[in-house]
Image 1 (cartoon, rainbow, N blue to C red):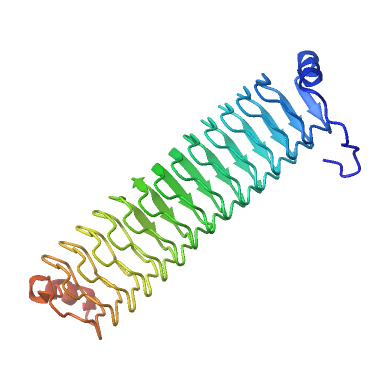
Image 2 (image 1 turned 90 degrees about the vertical axis):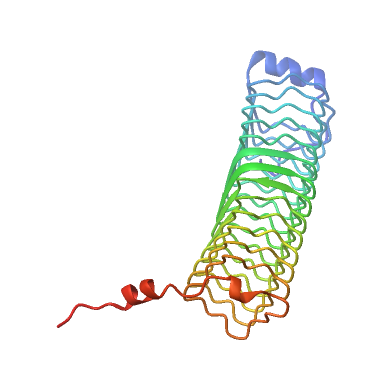
Length: 321
């Protein structure tokens, strides 16, 4: 959008509809502060458009394309965006409450502080987007892909995420309390001090993630994977961690008080000074784990599986010279 473009008088809804009837392409048009509620602009192409503070509530925007548009403080409540694409747009503090955003694609966009509560974000793709501080309470996210996105401080309380894959990026300080995270996978994601308290997330995967100071107290994480992740000072108090995998992870000073780690795999993990007070470790595999200084008060450590001596011998074998 050209900053020098005069934008004192936005197009009226009627004038915009007339232009769209002639051509689907709108370039460098002023819509700032305009009222376009209920507009039918399906398959329109918006390039360099200034729509800051405009209202598109309940508009039909399926298949639209938005390129380098300014959408800050705009309202899209209840609008339908199936198949829409956003490239290089700024939409900070915009409102997408109850918006239908099925199969939308976002790349290099800034949506800091936006509200997407109760929105349907199924099959979305976000690439290199900055979305710190967004609110996604009770939003539905199903089969989604996020790559190198900044979602620090995201609010996902009570949201539903299903089959979401996130690679790279940041969710530090985010709130996932009471969220339902079904078959979600995070790879090389920074999640320092993120709050997953009481989250229901069986089979969740955190591979090579930074989870220091995060909170998973009372969370249901059975079958989850935390391999090669940093879990320093993370709180798993009272969490359900049955059959979880922690291979080559670091969890120094982490809290596992009253947690259920039945048949978990800690092979090669370094959990020095962790607290296992009253934890259940029946059948837990602790092969070659570094557990120096661990607190075992009230924990039946003898029920865990110690080093596999045959495996240790095999690992140390060297051919004779």
